[in-house]
Image 1 (cartoon, rainbow, N blue to C red):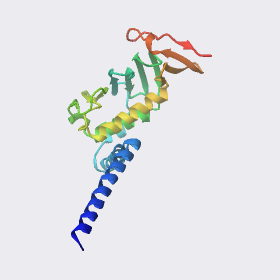
Image 2: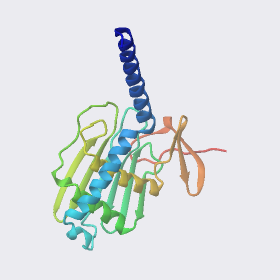
Image 3: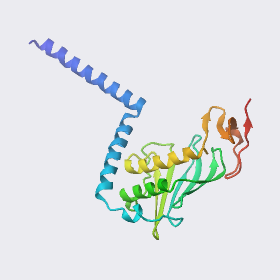
Image 4: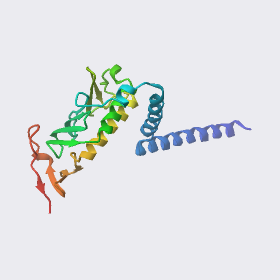
Length: 225
């Protein structure tokens, strides 16, 4: 084998590696592959923790309003929804919208098991041992504040979404809370003109971005034809 042929083979291998890396990055970016894999691994790890850790005090307890899971969001440089959500052990859910949301206030009554499952997950991941995650690996993101109050103890964690060191298990808990918020139908759908909301059965109400006023005030709603 000549030196020239070896050199050509090396160039081909390097080219394949470069192209392969580009394709992987593109796929990972388009489909959030890395994030999805991390979540899948965390789900498996969560199931293992449920087998190996004792959560009987939460599994079998008759939870009431003394158990409270709070979820708060901050502003970002875009139109991130800003709100407070309180989930009580009795199943009562209190939503207080502040900015870029469809409802200013709403009280719902959830299945108790939803709150119980969240409380169990927080126990499983050792939430009470978490510190804040506020390193800015990525800028212009929201901060989620999760608070868990149970049996005379309370712990709060601030999670800046641009902190890449935050554990995926915490993201799983946040994902479950966001699913509850979606079911409450309080956030709406974003459009270039404003927030499209479902209000009392209608599906074409628009809240223009320019009409947002002070926190906790009902936004001005324009009904589209």
